[in-house]
Length: 159
Image (cartoon, rainbow, N blue to C red; front, side):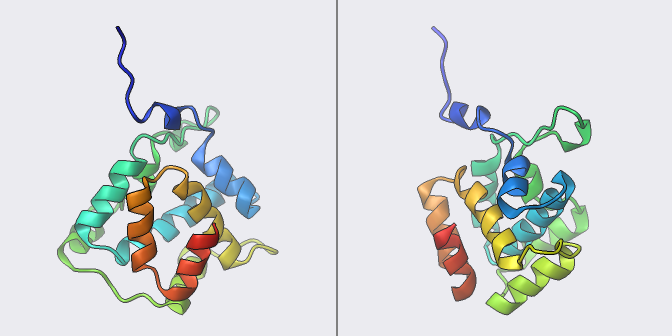
């Protein structure tokens, strides 16, 4: 008798980045990837290492593969985790940062490489939040909501 895992439904969902691209209105899947990485990095900066690891486990079984481009294969946890080993190591040593709503928005704009005309930072952040929430446990959703600054928490709740 075959066994199924609790993660099987996530494997059948359509691509995370395609959903972010469509929801935010990004013209390119790579814009969706770059912006998602910045939002995830800023979220991690608000969390303890333990909490960040919990979120990564929630996202580990959500695929991001694009058939036409092998460079975008893997899972959403790979977008969540920092790819720079030094930055990753340092962030695990320090505690959560105090990130205000304005700073969160500014980082999204500046570190995300700018946004295409017609896309607001709030709309793009909310798109990432909406698609991310599809793959999180209710406990992880609540943990994230609890660490967000007020204006960003509102975006999370309405996503």
